[in-house]
Image (tube, rainbow, N blue to C red; front, side, top):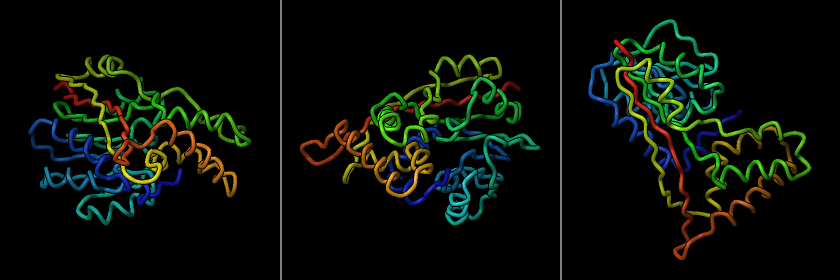
Length: 256
């Protein structure tokens, strides 16, 4: 999947808020080595480095375009252009932070214990993932995929939601942790512009579908989805679009 940093950062303020909320829930301690998994364009990784300036911070990111943007945004961070699905570090980290990235990876029952194993004893794992996949914004992508001439090319992308409920992750992490804090927040995002929910998903989940299609068919898919999603999220009297968005957070301290 080809990431477009400019498209992703169109809503940087809204995307940054849960990242900062997660960062602020991490207790005060003095990590020496930090990994930011799915570091994206580096705007959050920069904040991590600012909070712990004496730590070695590594941004791990699978998109070359995002890594290039990240190196500009956070030049004092070590950058690793690496697919998260194949991330097998040779060392442990005192803090592993991941904002809006691990939902792209399958088999969370195996993934989360594996990631926790890369945290030093007494260290912290902090994760945020979107859990908005049953909202119209995302359901209508699948509906569009299954109702058009492009179906045979994209229907394999229509899958169950990739993120489980809070209890699932508590059951995975509690046996490995001294402390586990898991919560959900639904942000009522007030968006501006023409069909902004389409533009939002075009920076993330919709991209998977558009990458497969070409030319007129790609444009027709985007237009068909855009028509559906605009009806699902009409503008209010002030010309704004209200976009509720649910996110799942967890902060776990590994057993010492």
